[in-house]
Image (cartoon, rainbow, N blue to C red; front, side):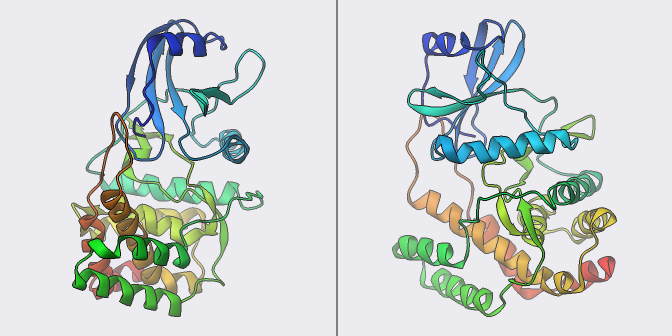
Length: 317
């Protein structure tokens, strides 16, 4: 949620006139995230988030908005798109698809507690359960082939040591296929800045625009690598808490438990590469945010050493 597209007050007034959401009082850009343009908008009827989609086309967005409606019907605290006076959940703003969402209460956390890690485990399991029979036609775009493409694009910027580490990890992931693991709808980006808490109660799951059909355990690994690592250092107690909470609603299969260390490494590699790409090829924008790639390099190295994983696996056995 960065600001790549600048908007003006007259443009915003005209856009909101198509809705029955009151008159615009104020607005400001939101700096969190890196994919879409987001503004916080206050009107005479409340507070809203305006999202301008920088890469997804309108026909692609239809799948994501439908998914949000499905999750809302299943009591997951997700943002619901507001419809304009003609009943449309999606409009055009400055030539880009745009949607308005009512602002959910709460704020993100920079230092998750054990209880918050448990809540993430529960919410992920709820997401995976309520979409068990949901057909979501969006496939993952971040597979091994994507990793190799990104590596080739950024290779000139890497040290020999980093290039060797990534090459070795890619070889390991290629040899350890996860084709037989349970699949379904995954969030794929459930980081701390995509979750809201109000009085220690989870009040919002945000930014589903990386969602896809992929390995369920990968979704858990992606979340755990962010929620259960303190400044890039694995917190074993938080990992165990998140996994145990997840398994109260969706127990892991034996094959999933075997692949847990592998998926943790795959998730760390993916976000190390994506952050490196953003660092090497930054996108232009009025307000943008870059995240430190070295965090996931440190996490990947710890997962490769596996000095703590036996405790996690015993906790879920």
